[in-house]
Image 1 (cartoon, rainbow, N blue to C red):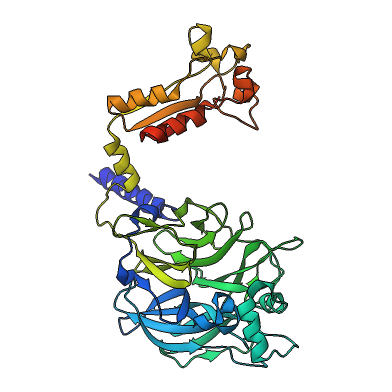
Image 2: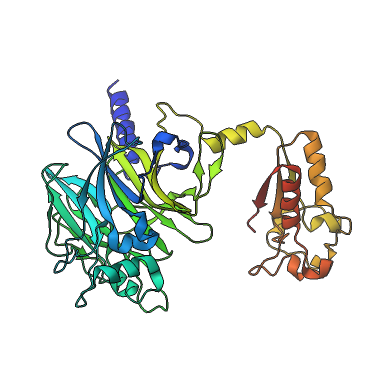
Length: 479
């Protein structure tokens, strides 16, 4: 019995140890559809960006940017203010309470505006991080500022104002204020960024240090590429020391929001990018300094699930923010721009009390029947398939591939008539020959006389699947 107890303790310790610093956070399948309560609009204003915290009053407090529609959407650079709303739930509905911060006027680093807030509670105080700008040595009149706002990016004053944007912080002992601002910005451009320090994302690590991520621009480029830079401090209001290594420098990204996950003992950050159709993504770090793509790198495409089963694709979907409470992700908030409206949405994150299959696993189970189409060079040479040498010796004459009567429509229609719900094509198998057009693998359909080297079985297969309503799958064998 003594040995059994030792064994059980040993196994228990392995289990606990194995749970540390594990990147197993999954959000994609747990995002709930939007209800009207999850949408926060303000008449006469553009709303932009959200940051949520739970107060001592047991209410949820939302800090967000807003500016009057009369200034146009590009008025955010000059006329934005930070407002405060409250709710009984982090997913809404929200009710406006007050305006918290505005630009302080001439002579201050935050003279012109207050924008893109992040609210945090550290060491018994509330810290409201935000961004602002000033006009430098040039004093701009109200008329000039209004003209700049309404003209937007092409106005001569736009880039000088944009490039003077910085991150600052206001501090209060009470969630309702009053707020005391720092007289200087928290961070100047350096290290991996040479212009701006904006859109702050702050969290406290296990080591007690404070990790601040800001957006800036890469150096030595014709047009800016947004970069995420990291600074660290022993105090929540600085001084922050810029790190040489960027958090994200491999992708043009914006609007980081970060938190420390105590259960997994690692940092997480969400962002958005406009690459392609754009997506909301997630990165992670075990130490707050060395970041990489998380196992679930793409949280969601830039479309919103609605309660009627439809998907809404707005013109812009940005400013992701994760509300994290009691060790669990509760809400993903996003800023929406569509037509002449901009507002905040709050996607509830479903919590499964017990292990449950996700949407993708359920879809696989419900697929029931599928067909696999295996098509390789040996279809044409009448030789017995031999796995032992197939990976080593290529087929000498790959021009034997010449399917004169190939009809992928006939394949998929037959599968459909059989009751299949999906079809899989072996795009490459152990000969290494690719049934598609490849720029990197010369052993492919581009090298054939068949269809003058322009054939593409994968493309035809996928088109046929879409035509007959089957889900296409691609099998890639590694030679």
